[in-house]
Image (cartoon, helix red, strand yellow):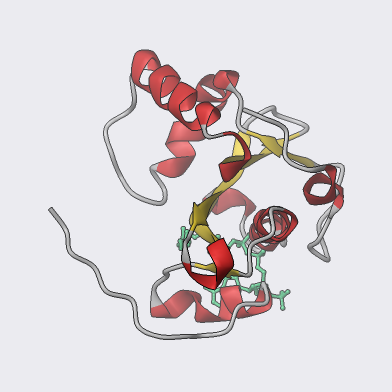
Length: 165
Ligand SMILES: CC(=O)SCCNC(=O)CCNC(=O)[C@H](O)C(C)(C)COP(=O)(O)OP(=O)(O)OC[C@H]1O[C@@H](n2cnc3c(N)ncnc32)[C@H](O)[C@@H]1OP(=O)(O)O
């Protein structure tokens, strides 16, 4: 996937984390075998992806460049993917053709939680949206996660609605 602006990559938020223990970087094709999909299953249980499906979706997202960023945290010791998150940049007509960031699919491996890694990933996603000129970043979450996202700088606003097919 396309490299995000250096401004996004430069920020290292997340007190209490040994910055050398985890490397936050863009998703790579090789991450399928480093546990990326197993990690996502902790967010939403699903059948394992075939390599073809993963490659095909990866190519679609890569074509969107910096408008769809998937970040992962790699454990420097094991090489496993232990955290992930995505940000989509929506291009609007309102707000003088403004752009909005949507944070999605944030997850930290159960064994690595509570070390500031989730906050670090979210702050990197937010930095990317800001660097892309977004006037706000929004996300949907369950009520139990209010505290986590508040720590990441978010405030509660409006109501989430869904229609599932
Ligand atoms: C938009 C979306 O993607 S919503 C979906 C979010 N993902 C999930 O629910 C998947 C399962 N959960 C997880 O993967 C993790 O628990 C996460 C991503 C929610 C949090 O990741 P962690 O790495 O454990 O969080 P991290 O250690 O960075 O916590 C940062 C701060 O938030 C606090 N925090 C973390 N989780 C919670 C919570 N559920 N409620 C309240 N506060 C919390 C921490 O205590 C910490 O505060 P501190 O700095 O005062 O110590």
